[in-house]
Each structure stands twice: as C-alpha cells, then as structure tokens.
Image 1 (tube, helix red, strand yellow):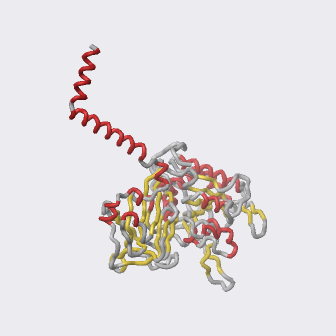
Image 2: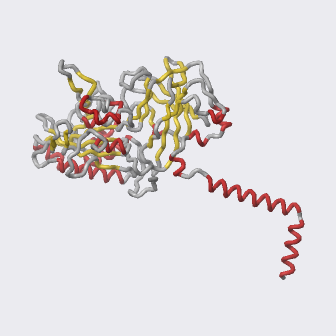
Image 3: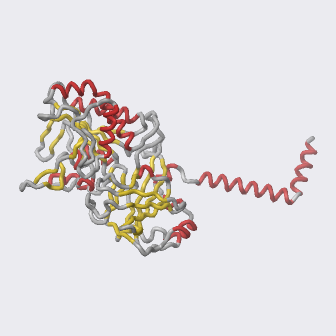
Length: 442
C-alpha cells in the first residue's frame, strides 16, 4: 500500500498543470490569510477617517476639484448630536438659518437633506448618518452651492450616542490638500463629513446627570446646599438621578453622575460638574433640582433660549403619556409643550437683556451655542468655548414651598423618572435593551 501512495504522489507532481494549480491555491490562501490578518480592526477604525478607506480611483472619479457656485462658512458647532454650520459667528440669527443643507455620499451618490433652524439642535443629525464620506452643499436662494471654509479644518473626532453597542465617529474635514495622496487637488477648502461605524470608547459617555444642590461658588468660596423643605432636599435630587441613570443604562447608554452624593462642586473648571461632562464628551447634560416659588405646583423643564427645546418637548410628551402632570400649557409662540420653558436672560445695569442666560447648568453646558466660558465669572470654563456642546435640560421637579407639589412628586417620582428616560431614548432614537456590559475600547 505504501508503494502505491508514493507512486501516486510522484505521478501528481510530474503533471505540470497540477503543480501550477497547487502553487496558485497555496498563493491565494497565503494572500487571503494576509488580508484577513492585516484588515483594519475595530480599534484601528477609531483613529481613521472614512477617507482612509477609499480607493484612489473612487476619489479621482467622484470628487470634483472646483465649483462655479460656492458658499463660505466661518465656523461650526456640535450641540448634543447635531452639527450646524455658520456663515459668520455661531448664533441663532446666522444667515444659514432656514437653509437646506445637502449631503452627497462620495461613493454612492446618495443625498441627504436637512433644514437648519435657529436652535442649536436644528442641524445635521449625526446619529442618523450612514457610514461614508459626504460632500456638503447648501441651497442659497434656490441655488445649490458647495460649502467651503477660508481656513483648513480637521475637527476632533466626535462619538455619537451608543446604539446597539455601536457608535458613529464623525469628523469634519476642510482642506485643499485632503486628497493630495490620491493626486486630487481641491481649489478651495471644501467641507467633507466623514462617518465611521465603530465601537464606543469607554471613557466617552452619553449622558451626564447633574443632581442639583451642594453647589460650591468659587467667587465667594462658599457652599450652598440648595432649596429644601417639606421633607425634600438635595438627597432627593441624587435619588432621582440614580433612578434615571438605571433606566438609561438598560438601553445601553453610558451614564455618569456629575458629583458624589455629599460632594460640593461648582459649575466652573475642569473638575467641576460641568467640566466632568465636557471631559467625558457627554451628549446630554440633564440637571435635576428643586425650586422655591409662589405659584408653580407641578414639575417644569427649563431649556436654553438658544435651542428649540425639542428634547424637553419629547420628555414633556412622555410625561403626558405616563400621566405625569407638568405646570403650564402649550405655548404656540415658542413651540414649547406644556411644562417646558426657556431660561431667562440676565439683564445688565441698564435693565436690558444680555446674551447670557441665568442657569449655569444650561449656559455653561452648551459650549459656543450657549456662550459657555465667555461670561465674566466663567473664565474657568474658557477651555470649553469650542468644545462639543451638551444638550442641556434642567428639570425642576418639585416646589419646596408648596406641600401639594411635594406630595405630587413623592407619589409620581417613579413615573417621572421613566418619562425623563423615555424622552431621552425617544429623542435620540435609541432602540433595544441591553445589559451594562458592552464591548468597548479603552
């Protein structure tokens, strides 16, 4: 039997076609193994732009180097999960308000459109973008124009909210030399948006919950425990924060509390409750607190006047669905639902409104959208002027001067916690339910 096998092998290797076929098969196997071993891992993708994945021929064939109709922008903002572009400085009356923005996928030609509103969240919904590289256009008086900047920009990578244990990593790129390696030279710093589907970086969170009270004031070097009465205090803020945190984490979100239970912390500086949100790149800054008022007897939601209040409106809707009463009625002038109010603007010595709103948890959490770090006493937040802005909502859930308000909260706190969590989940379109353990990069 042994001699028969050897003779068979000798016969096989004497056949040139068989030898060639064997060599080709082995070569293909080696190449396949090499490609598999050297493919970009999930960790590698965290540091990549989608440009890094494109073949040169795709860039050469699909990227135009110049346009007859162009539109210059000066800056951009990210607030929550929304990207906005500004013709001049970032403000609610910019020339881009009301414009339709068109994103065109470089590879597929697919087009997505968004309308810019006056609110900081009324922009491009980054969490909805399919993976790809997008050219940016605007319609200016019905004329389609290619968006560019007069200076080069390579934004810091932005990680969206967690969805199904994955995130999107976003970069805004504007540089004439962006495709120089592919032999393509742009005539202007045209804007591109890169979208990569990746695993989350564990240090980056989705929601920062801020239990009000226990506020340290660095200017006066004093501590303020906050409003209390009728059996409620800052400890109840913390209890409500934990309830909401638990519900959000069941949906796969990463949530942090802005301070320790008995810690006194300010809203200014890197180690403050606001700073902790920025440093961990939270998308939502949810503040919880009590109030002292002569009239209000039900919970209210306060938002920045530089937003459209859409997140708070969604929370208010969930409150209605869960039979939780809020104070007030719908406001047709502002578009805010019942129970949702804009923060007041601080007045100067002449009694005129300044651009700064009253509550620091809203003013200092929204980066350039809410003028964070620009007020005289907010110099410690200067570093966050151009950071990714957190979508701020301040829930004042009970009036300590009104026994009926306090009792209402005590009887409805579980439903209120559910409504707040459901509102965040619905607004950001988070689906599914997961345990807290996820595969993430450190």
